[in-house]
Image 1 (cartoon, rainbow, N blue to C red):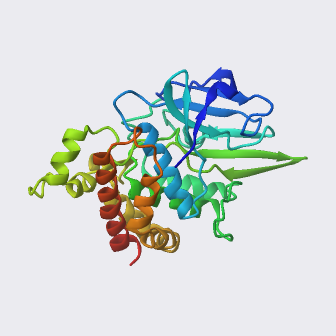
Image 2 (cartoon, one colour; image 1 turned 180 degrees about the vertical axis):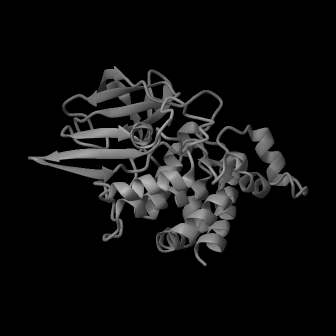
Image 3 (tube, rainbow, N blue to C red; image 1 turned 60 degrees about the vertical axis):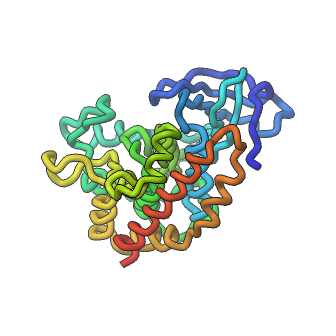
Length: 309
């Protein structure tokens, strides 16, 4: 069973302005169970599965050795959320994607998180490739010898597995590390994956999709319609769906896409079930688990078909 961290052992530090969820930074008191470094506590919104989906996604990412921010289930004054340690040191500087894009691209609106027509997959990939980023500092047993752009491709293939709809321009970035007179640019680990696995659906709707014989209304149909945050080559083409994103990645970056697709293809149903079996029963319903596992199974097959070829 996953631990649930009680934030009575922590002291509040400061609020966090980025994002839409209620959150704040905390620092453990001396003698607490975790390191005395800043940790972000994000409170899951009522009637959503944001807490379990964030934790499950984190555990899946670690299983395929994808550099990711680590998340723990946590509670503060009766309110449930997830806790994650800051993923860069005090000598590092966090630079989010929207700032990077606005400095490089003409007329890029870094305040417009959604419906950003200039937020194209090809554009973002070219910017990241041109930056020649070093790999994330938090390697988490990843394969060595890859560049930062290769890991970012891994993030996007992983998004397609979990059905993450929220890889907008504030949900990735780089870390500027200062070592003496040298400045190194590293891709940040992947983070913030709660918008996935049907976490906002009600159990009533989940059950209907789990039981229906209408192929247009199944869990698999739902997963197949999942949209990413990226626009296609032309604005009129609209936002890319997960299969379309996989196809673009496979065409432009075949080797890295196949590497991460192969890792995801090796995941078993048993591993998915084990991750959810360790969740506290009162944090996620059985309908949510069955729905999430069927999504993962469908998306894994899609990634095998598109990315492993």
